[in-house]
Length: 114
Image 1 (tube, helix red, strand yellow):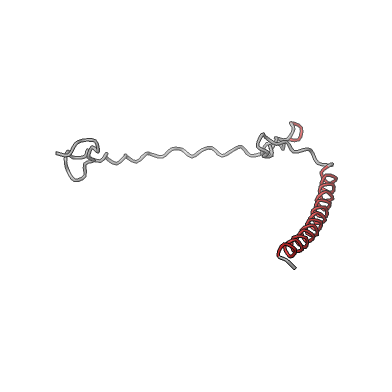
Image 2: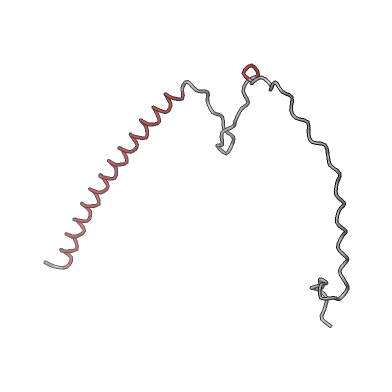
């Protein structure tokens, strides 16, 4: 057998293997898609009794307050009064201004070196 004949035969075998793998992949996709569809149908039936959830432009759920008739009654006890402000402690004295030309001063980065 010549080189070209062997190459043709190998290409034919690889083509058949690729076709079989493609069919297996398609079967697996169909199977998974069927499972997903069944799950969605079951979820829709369970959600039919619930109110639809609204979402904003980014897909986040919007929590709506309950209607006026369904709001819980106010608490029986009034809210606690805020505590009275205590005498404020005197503020610490401000730090002294930085000394000119000292080691702690902040040099100007744009000032030329002398």
